[in-house]
Image (cartoon, rainbow, N blue to C red; front, side):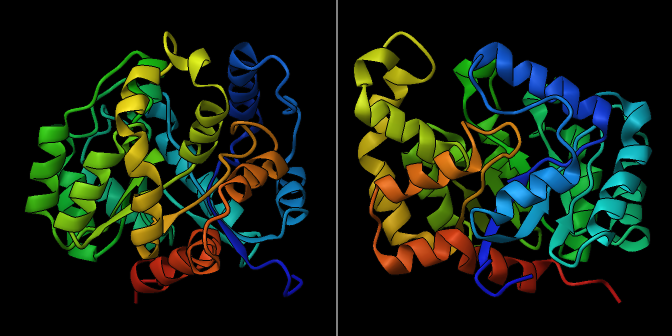
Length: 297
């Protein structure tokens, strides 16, 4: 790996071929001109990211059915084992029995870094008592919980933010990453970030969405989160510039809001100060990995 590849992408999805094909078909229904291809391979995904200067990756998996949980977690371990620059995360399903034991297996036996849920796609509420066994085990091990948040209107679902607060109160030893930073609720994201020191934000897709809105707000009024974004847009830049040491950034490759190059161009469009960019493009993620994801002994 060349030294110039210093960027850390905190959000990619290297999945088994069947799941990758499904993801690409899904994104092309929304964005027909999206450059992703159904037969993209893990090596091609990584090469495309490296071309953008990315050297380290978080690989995020999530089972759509309970019965694929074990195989998908083993897949995540194998992908991470293929390169020292890939950090693999585990997952489970709301129907998974003994969530604490599955979580411990992911961390201890498979050597994964933490757990990821995508409640909208997995069709359940992540902030609920159902997942307390997983939360307790992660807190015991000091390992992170990464969870999709925001884009409620896009997915036509909601999340229980009151229970999110309860979860953060009950489990201060469990680092939490709010993927997409509660988009578009940047005011609430800032409030929670200041209140809970174990909390991090991931601005994946939020940056591109704000750029698109900034260039043509009229196109968003009756679609996506346009109205709520208008109410929150003034929080966006101060949140990033003042709290960048707790904020990461990724591409959602291969199904992000465009190619990796386009997504990094979206970030550059805002012209954040160099120190802020350094945090977003790797410094925060590297410190997160060092503090919370080192191998258990």
